[in-house]
Length: 88
Image (cartoon, rainbow, N blue to C red; front, side):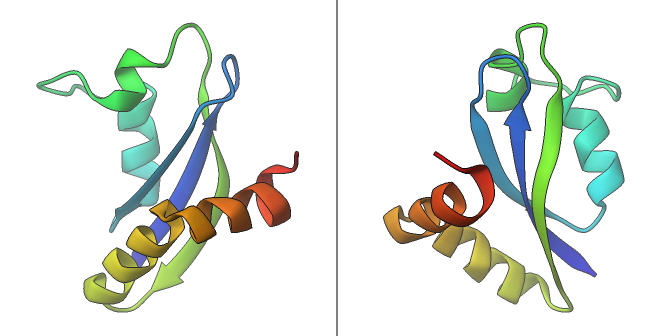
């Protein structure tokens, strides 16, 4: 299984959209509970807040997850997230 997910920083409200085959491990990596070789967007913008999973979708194929990730990162996708998931 592959997942497209949206996480939100509990301190500064920033959001991140990504895809992975192991959601639990990826969330730990975003929250610095697993080592990373380089600083990512989520590590640079973490502050003292935690990244919290606010939305996910499951896919059988990675290509479908990548397509949906791209859709959610578009203007219409971010509007969908704001209106339906994240609120005003």
